[in-house]
Length: 160
Image: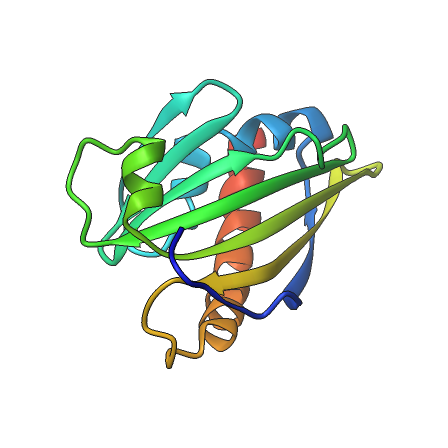
């Protein structure tokens, strides 16, 4: 287990109104193509375990997204994101975890609305395995704001 420096706090929260049902949002969270809609500099993604884990790769690295079933419910999908840099295929849970750069938790809180879903997405508990000097909280916050805009646009288009 690598030594982690941890922030154990909320880095950012966004409220995103979607014209998508909560069921569809839950499906989208574990659909690589939907995550790649907003993933930074996306290249490819794939399902590792259906409904439980996927990977998404961009120019900077590859992320493993895993649902934490013991923390999740119909109204809240809790996802652990493990990101590795410069990792080559094949992308497996074990290989991504072994090359970890940082991890964080994403809370996807889903509230049904007349228009679809109010998604309250929280990025929290950032843990860095390497490059301790990098201000990951700031980096995550800035990318979360950009990602939220892209997520809203593309997921609403998918719903039509």
